[in-house]
Amino acid sequence: MLGAAVLFAMQPQAAGAQSPGVPAGMKQPGDFPKVKLTVGMYLIDASVAANEADREQGLMYRNKLAPNEGMLFVFDENAGHCFWMKNTEIPLSIAFIRDDGIITDLDEMKAETTDNHCPTHNGRYALEMSKGWFAAKGIKPGAQITGLPQP
Image (cartoon, rainbow, N blue to C red; front, side, top):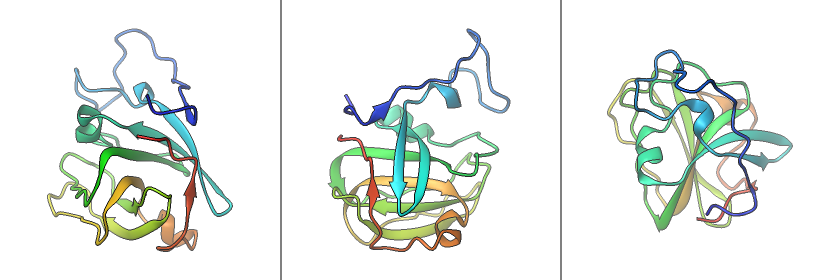
């Protein structure tokens, strides 16, 4: 269970309806649990990937994100979790986050690449947003994200 902070506000979708570009058998964007996060004065609507299958899929096959929409990856262990962009059609920015919500590292990731993006510090969370989102908001390492669900 992700805790009380997670809002299970699912997007209604007709049974069996597929979003364009998302292969059959993959989780649809509206099927992920949601959480509201805050960093500075900004509110983020994040889908939550807190199990192995959801973390593996992440934002694969998506072709857009709303302006303050992202995906929060929640891990059971505090470690250096690396990311890549295979089958991810949109360029993204990623924040690596410690247990206490402090951003340790930010990185920019190109679409459809297998380059590794790894933090310099261990953490339990990572937050993917549209490319340039953190820079455009002036968010840097040391900023704190609140509203994180417990693993």
